[in-house]
Length: 433
Ligand code: CMX
Image (cartoon, rainbow, N blue to C red; front, side, top):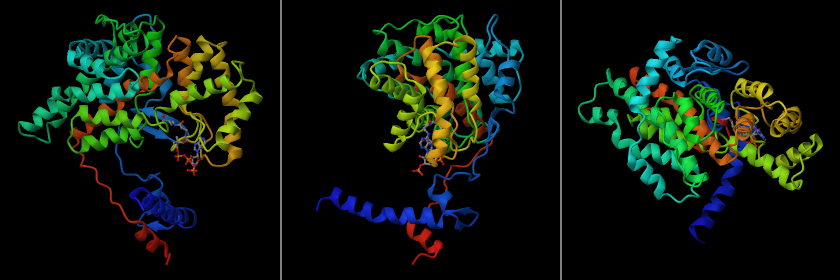
């Protein structure tokens, strides 16, 4: 028998042990935590500290203590715009203080001095197969810039724990300032006939991104809103946790963010936003292009669940109500694109999916998360290439995770190293002979 066949037999024999432990002995304690928490991805185990954001299961996210509406209202905005400077939001995440307009504009000016992307990044992107997923391109572009790391140079020239945050801050800011151009370059190269648009450094983060994407205002405001909403969701989610974990080994921001972006690319995490649009397109295709009715959606939702797949954009590991990031985007749609067809379909899903998930009886949270709504706005402004949506999420997520690892170094957090146990040890704890 070959290796793979032997492995299959071992897996088949082992699975019932894990299933039994979860089903019959999930509540058995291992010290302070249970077998279910140990096997089930560490849900609810308090082992991370962050002050950048906090996720309340019922209220949703607060950034530095501020709700989403408060952030949008209090932060300074570019003249004539409805959404705040992303740079001012970076100031808030790092310091906990709402910046004045002058302070935010100082960060805008600082970003411009760091924004130029090295030519070799474009060369590497161009050398990649064009059908590579844009998240692969985005992650590779971040990683390849590691040679620029000031933190790595600082480490090699005699590391000091007390001042390590300084070069981490420099790397984090250098990286952030370059992400809009990298993302827009990937987009224009891959989907728009290889027609990159040069940056306009007179514009802020959101404005320049919209300009380089080739999408007219108010897309600049959409970009500002989108990046802020997707920035952070406390520390336990896959992208934030991965970035923190890798940085805990004193890897620099380039290694750490690239790793976090790879985690964001998972369909149960950030990729769910493209999955939502893919799922809706599938519905259209199966109906021969017809706009689905509520009855059609009910049928397709059940078909999805019966096939064993998840309903993308619904459910959450921590939240137990509609995600305020979903609500915020929904309010944008109600104001600016109330009659949009895709918005109507997504709203219909919102009417039926929670009830179906409740009836299905598995998901602890039947309500939509951030990913259920985000494609609608992008699609409306012409960004219909939905496999790019997770890159947008990644640019936003960089704000939160980079603020976190700057503070990780400031506080000298330890290298992460939780303890593992064997299945046999769990069976012993459960009293299984
Ligand atoms: N559709 C169908 N089943 C779902 C479901 C959904 N949307 N959400 C959860 N479930 C299922 C789980 O797969 C799990 O089934 P098993 O017991 O067979 O493994 C069961 O319900 C219990 O899961 P849970 O405790 O409610 O949720 P988890 O913490 O395990 O997972 C999440 C959370 C987000 C991965 C899950 O809800 C999911 O897969 N949602 C769809 C994908 C998605 O939208 N992801 C984006 C999340 C936001 C983000 O990170 O970007």
